[in-house]
Image 1 (tube, helix red, strand yellow):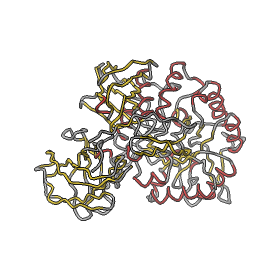
Image 2 (spheres, helix red, strand yellow; image 1 turned 180 degrees about the vertical axis):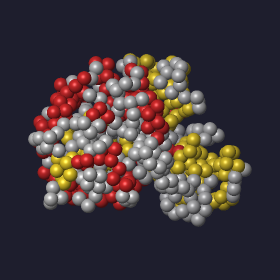
Image 3 (spheres, rainbow, N blue to C red; image 1 turned 90 degrees about the horizontal axis):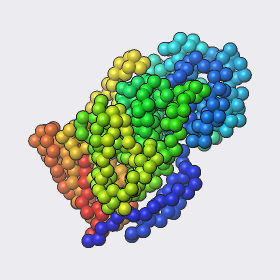
Image 4 (spheres, helix red, strand yellow; image 1 turned 120 degrees about the vertical axis):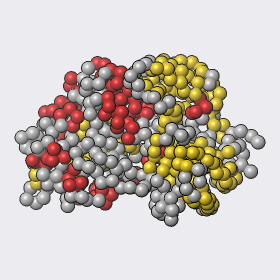
Length: 556
């Protein structure tokens, strides 16, 4: 038996290019690249100004983005976020508040473009904007896209020349519209313009569902963010188990940044770092004209920004959690099968604490070089792990490069593609209880399980399945799959691998708090494989993880 380790450095082939490797035996060949959209970087008006905006304010923010050097760090978008409507004209076209914006919206887009920036616009999936419903902006009544999709989209993008569209859901919710239907129709209207450079954000204040990954460039996964630590952590936690839905050009959005708006300096660093390692859009929410030097230093950390803009397109997984606020998060960078990791040591507690990360938990082998991305300091080669003290509410962010990397052979269920996963809960904004949709797959925290979490409420329907994607092996062959599960009842599961179904019956671990393993042989193809677990007629057991034995060994 011969171990196969990945020990090849991928090169970036130009700005924002996706490297697609093909594996032949022990070699990695870079064979092609395609342009992708990284998470957008820019500024949005809502956090600082809400609906109290005007032409002068927006121009001033655009000017400041250039003069401050933010543009050189990658920030490009100036997004005008509600507060500028004045109803509709007799022909149904949008009317803009001429007092706030006397020169009109095309002029403003042209002005933003003249600075080398991109211009962002706001709308609503229903009829009335959030500002009209909650901020007294009467001009926002009836200006939503509903019944005006193509008319408005053509005006915004073909006539006025904007580059980004955020679409809210206050009016859509009031009308009880189907969100998948509405946002899909809006995406079609955007496609009908013929422009392929438009960035589309779905603002539904929660993860909308797996359908959104083929509709939008980004989508909100949480409530509106507040300028306080609890809100930052709350929004981060809403994204904890959504990594399966992040991919090159399509990202989970934890909302605009609150850096420079009242958090402590340590919390600002943590806030920015969390957004970077989770590949969330980086839309600044502070006043750029009064930005302090310390805020600018955080927002222009090019090493952190590179983690956010990494071409691999994934977001971090939770590597370890002591249950008391000390966590390690990590993601692969510069390729899914690279030996490079971005690692975030996160101290959520109220006291400074020591946190360690083990190379084995990162699928790295041999000594690894470590760089501190906030201190901008190389920390040398470490044999098996790295330990440091992390301040309260603080982070340490590392780039770790291993001597080699072994193929991932353990796949936690909470990070798998859960097809019906959607977060429905009582929401603090817009202050109405959400309709609870029960009995659908979801990730659930559970200290019994290996990653302190599992996937539950699976099965009992054709679409309510779980898929472990990106199961990679360089050699086709038969492998042993072990599934760890929890169930206090006899339950069945169908494992589907490359068109072959294996039915497992009477899966019962004794209780829903006890783990048990079941094993089976599966045939994997060379390259990437998908392993689906389903039960169309009954419930699946809760699933902790799957593990493939000898994945780093030549198949038989």
